[in-house]
Amino acid sequence: MKLRVYLTFHEDTVRQPIIWKLGKEFDVVTNIRTAEVKDHMGLVGLELDGDDDVIEAAIDWLKAQGVHVDPIEQNIIEG
Amino acid sequence: MSIVRALKCRECGQEYAIEPNHVCEFCFGPLEIVYDYDQLEGVFTRELVESRPHTMWRYKELLPLDGDPTVGVQNGFTPLIRARNLEKVLGVSELYIKNDSVCHPTLSFKDRVVSVALSKAVEFGFKTVACASTGNLAGSVAANAAAAGLESYVFIPHDLEQGKVLGAGIFGTSIVGIDGAYDDVNRLCSEVAGKYGWAFVNVNVRPFYAEGSKTYGYEIMEQLGWRAPKHVVVPMASGSLCTKIDKAIKEFIRLGLVEDQETAIYGAQATGCSPISQAVKQGSDLIKPVQADTIAKSLAIGNPADGYYASRVIRDSGGWAEDVSDEEVVDAIKLLAETEGIFTETAGGVTLGVTRKLIEQGRIPRDESIVVCITGNGLKTQEAVADAIARPRVIRPSIHDFDAMMAEERPAAAADA
Ligand SMILES: Cc1ncc(COP(=O)(O)O)c(C=O)c1O
Ligand SMILES: [Zn+2]
Image (cartoon, rainbow over all chains, first blue to last red; front, side, top):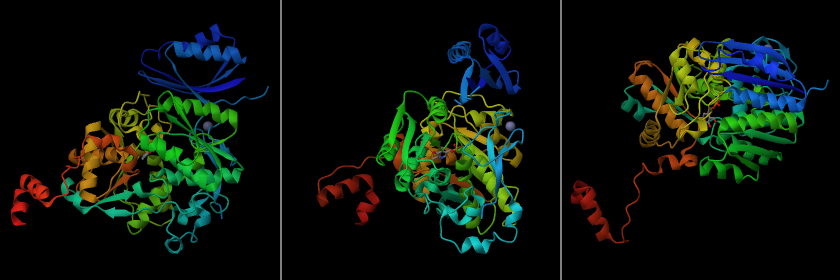
């Protein structure tokens, strides 16, 4: 499935290459659609594409890294 | 006549057909209704508006429906009062209260947004409507859905005030309390909206819903005698009302209904949940999410969806944002009640508290017109003031007891009697 989320990075996470790590750890396609990054915080609109359980695990991993995850809407797009 | 042109992405400008959709496919930006104002040239006049019933629908050309409203037909058009007693206390010369604490039918400005959202949901063919709410929205969705014969689900944080919970439950809605803060409720509702195919007023029909707030701004201007105020102070949760009052003023100027007064818009929050006012005060345009901790639960949104746009409206209009402590909120609720006879909820306490602060700081000048947006009713948040109000002194039903009480409490009045 494809899942669209907003990620909010705080002071302690904003400098880390978290989206790169996510792509290494999980078999998901990450597609950044919007981003605004300042030195104290960052906001990224991200689309994730992959198997349902992998995406779920990837989201849990992001939260464990201290990233604030907001679903834009669970839209299951066929194909 | 509908002059709605499209749904347009506020970030990249991509336009979309009119459908239950709130987010841009390309950049995930929020969608907003855009209109062809040219079609109203010479048609939408002060006289036309004045000839219509006193409801929010007297401005229906500027709302995103295809036909006439089917939900909340009587809603809106609340009093704008000149607050002369409050003027004296605050030391200002021209102060007004726009009083949506008496908005029909559920006593908050949410009846405006809900009327538009549910009327649009009916046009789209939805049978079930829902919302994520900090309290007032839940009551309004429940009541207006009941009257319209729609099924409803309302999702609220589990620890809301009793008056808000009861004020929704009474309408026979399915009320779901979430063990979490409003932002958790909102997050869950994004998922539910995608899965269940309901009209979620503040998720998938949010662009239509939000337009309803403009009527609050239109009424202020009409009631001021077709004049925009110099200063407006607005309570902020998601920040939507703040942006829509600005849009309302710009639309009336564009249509030649009022002159441009360069109205400054001020945002009000409680210090315990002030992500937007903090951003404005720090000169930042990124809104940092916070964990809310305040008695102003109706405004307790830690990650406000329209925070960025509200902060921009405030900055571009030459306004400012401030926040007040819970104690100041209670003081302001009492001040409004004792000076103007209006009992507002905690959100109103926030707005008046912030107004006072901005006047004292010199941010709002004392000699220009100021409108304070009172958006909800105090009977729904009684817990907040219960400890701050004098309790009745109980005496026996005897004139001797009463005389004794008077002699003790008001010796001068007792001596005269
Ligand atoms: C009484 C009251 N005033 C103001 C607001 C703020 O609304 P907005 O989310 O449009 O900023 C709310 C929101 O719930 C409210 O209940
Ligand atoms: Zn876009």
